[in-house]
Structure formats: C-alpha cells, structure tokens
Image (cartoon, rainbow, N blue to C red; front, top):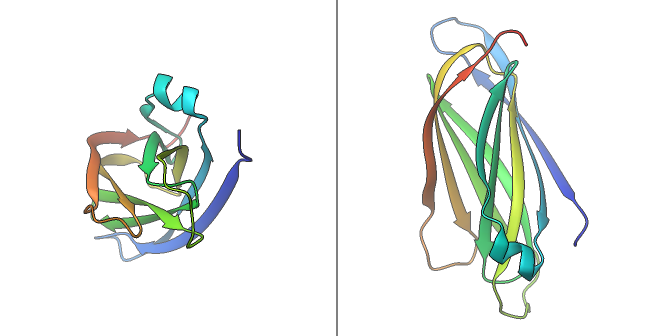
Length: 142
C-alpha cells in the first residue's frame, strides 16, 4: 500500500448573520487502495462531533499519478466539500486507481448543516459529480 499522504488547507470563512469571522479548516488524508482492496471496499461514511464533520469516501481516477486536494465552500448552513484528483505526472500508465480518503472539516460552529460532497478528476472528460448530499448536526461539546 502506498504511503499515507496528507494535505491541510485552512480557510477563513465569514459566518453569516453574526458579523464575526471564524476559522474553518479542511484536512484530507488519503491512500491508494491495492486492486483487491478496491474491489472489496466501498467506503461511504459521514460522522459529526465536537465542532467537526468527518467524511470517508473513495474516489476513482484513470491512473495512479494523482494527489487529492480538498476545498470547502460555505453559503450560510450549506457546506460544499470538493475533492479533486489532481494529475502529478504527464506520462502515466492508464489503469483505474482508487483512493480512499478521510476529510475532516473543523472549526464549525454548532448547528445543522447541509453537506454536499463533489468529486472531480483533473484532465478527465467527465464533469464533477455530486457523490453525497446529507443533513448533519455539529455539536458544541463531546
């Protein structure tokens, strides 16, 4: 199995209606699955807790020359997590690669959110696709 990779991107988002800015972050950790794991494993999980939401999914790409990047957009209580499989090399051997990832959305205020997860593959002819839409509640204490 390939080494676990991690990317952290911190975003400052304005909380609608309160006039204050809150730090909201998205962290993504991922690894490429071996072919046997990819056939046997279909991850789709959503968890919430103390000011966080965790999303566990898989994303498929046409080759294994990829890094995953995550971006979080917010409009009121609607959160959109965009996960992109970015190309890291030009001359890759074609063949489907499957990446398992966990995205951690942190710094959220307690409340009810509508979460949408969108996958896209850089350099692919396919359009970004919505892979999950779900309401979720973030707690203010454990």
